[in-house]
Image 1 (cartoon, rainbow, N blue to C red):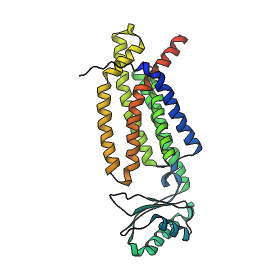
Image 2 (spheres, helix red, strand yellow):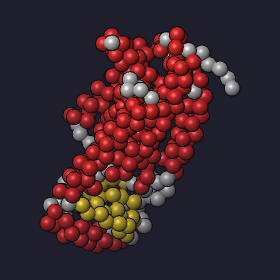
Image 3 (spheres, one colour):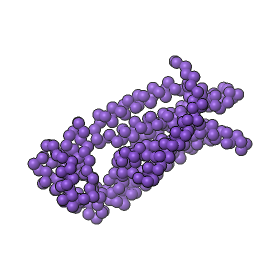
Image 4 (spheres, rainbow, N blue to C red):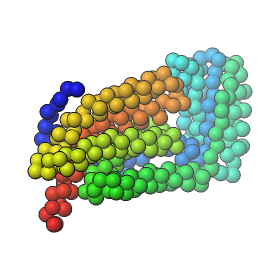
Length: 298
């Protein structure tokens, strides 16, 4: 196995400000712009329609406006695999969700009968149910982070635990920020992707921490910086190969999987890249910070 001798701790002076800047931008975009919540989080009606003949997106929008759905959003989801497929989303009150859905499907099949309109699926979620799902989704991530923090503290040492949590929060916030910037739909599917990223990232971090602990026991006089450098260099091949193969599969699914899973695997691809970076350049400097802080207190 090839041995590396990269001074990772020497690069923390660049990596830490970069991470702070990325997290700051993500937080700003999230708080100022907000997320484009899907129907399962926002509440409303969602209709997926497919046309046998080509239909202009502008024409579809104008027909929806004529029918009284001026607040609707329409996006093409077919791509090259399945052309002429569109997703129509409409906000609606809980008491008339079924009527709104029926009205949209009737309008589409009637007005675009010559284009061969076919309704692929319809989804309805009440605003209250959507809000509860949104809260539950974020709570699931919070509980996952808390349980991981407890696990790391019990398995290693309490000084390691904050590093893992900071790295995971760093990963999640940047992905959420990218979704806010790109105005991509944020749904339960994306929460699932974020939970998968949390699991992937913590696995990478645990491998590094395990090696650091080994070197703490073998060479206590070496100093924590040296032990972290050695651990990161020793696990670098494993980290790269695991990340590369995971990213490759996720990228293929993102490109070839179709619109239904596109955003999910977009989040996974982002998570693999950011998670690998955070394992090398976020979790480790946090250990150094807390070790220094706790050492001063002692």
